Length: 119
Length: 108
Image (cartoon, rainbow over all chains, first blue to last red; front, side, top):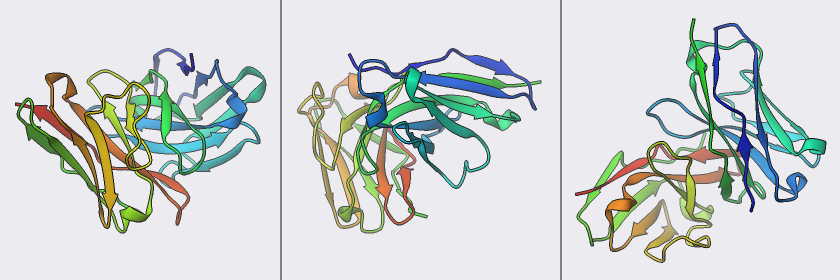
């Protein structure tokens, strides 16, 4: 069964760094893009960016460029989303999802990782 | 940047047909995908490429796309269809994914 397995909920303080993960067993991880999607409490879906693990090509939404970093490790079929200095406004649920190409639908979604940033 | 506009809410009686729209400039020239998100759950793909239904999605879900409006239709609506519905495209001018703001479907 194709699935995306995300790391557990995190509670951090403003200014701290954080890295969350998304592991993709059950399919050729290097042949699909992995996107990260933010959902703030009670709000809609926001695309942060996508990475192609096959060659690490990465595209960011202008809204998130420079705010967080997307990476991937082909050897472990894992994608990552990391922050160097969290803000309270980063409090949200973060989903990873896969899509076959630019125009393709996001057909498999992880359960999401809740990140809470509070002093 | 490309903008997708959805009504914040749509209400429908059980057994009727719900139509959820997604407006965008010349959206008919793009492939539109639709996702259903129930409270506390991850989104689920219900229609891809304007009108294709993934395996396991009931035939009651269908999509169309023309001109400046794409539409997700849900026939014979049931209480279990209550959810938020999001449309999504790839904007080839900016090379970015774009989501609509989402529409909350309420079954009366």
